[in-house]
Amino acid sequence: MSMRPQLFTRGLSGLSQSSDANSPAEQRDDAKRNFLKTMRPLPTQHYWNVYFDRSDASVRRHGTCILTDSAPSRQSKDHRPDDGEYKVQLEQLGGQIESVQDFWRYNNNTPVDRIKMRESIYLFKSGFKPIWEDRRNVNGGSWTFRVPKTIGPDVWTRVQLLAIGEKLQSALGDSDQLCGVGLSVRFNSHLITVWHRDSSKQASVDGMLACVLEELPEELRPKAENYFYKRHCDHAGFKAPPELQAVLDSQKRADDASQPQPDAAAAAPHPEVTVEPPSAQ
Image 1: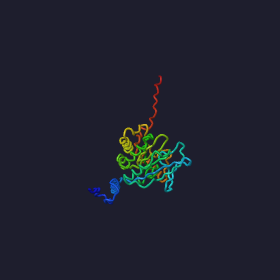
Image 2 (image 1 turned 90 degrees about the horizontal axis):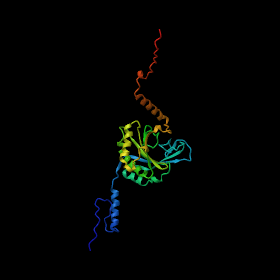
Image 3 (image 1 turned 120 degrees about the vertical axis):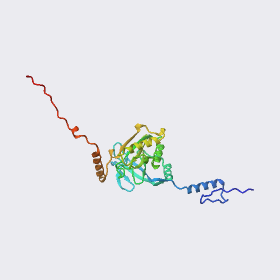
Image 4 (image 1 turned 90 degrees about the vertical axis):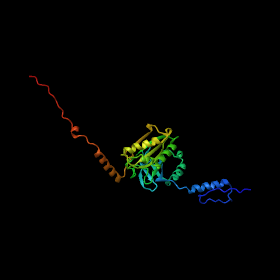
């Protein structure tokens, strides 16, 4: 009787090649597990954090959110109901995402369809938080894409991949940065947002929109009336901390000064000229 050939597993550390394995199928399973263990993670260019924004409509407190480190701050983009009063719980979920494997582990285990009304989830670069008035966001803005809930999770996954794959970053203007992306649940739609740091860069504003529309397949692409851009500081609930408000005021004065001024002579009112009819002799 011929002997059963052993499974050839050169290069797979820790794999037993002894003949006392229960079956060839179990040997293959062991080989697969050990192969996966030897695979090196594919690192992302930046580290990322996931935040969950849980609204509490029972608490009537205007425009605040509470972070997990107990530091008070203002609320994040587009969470305010019509009366503008509610409380938010912003918490970081899990550990830091440092590789493609980390991303898929988080994404595959996050049931977007179970996120409740007016709750949100964010994928943001390490160092940024999904808050309008965060020091690194205060001069920024975001695109908002409204999509049906039936396709929201698919669009959300694709936009996240554009973020961690640096596709969105490459669409920005010089010296601008992508902050992160978010998904907020509404009654019959998902609002997917793309945040960047410098709203004064029109190249970034245009580039982000073009990137999202070009990369989404046609059946997932939102219609023109279902997306818009807005600076964080243009939201009714925006209120920068005092130390940052001075910076914003100074920047606004600088922007105003850089605008071309009308010619003084042209702007001056012209004297009214009255022509009297010649008097009768």
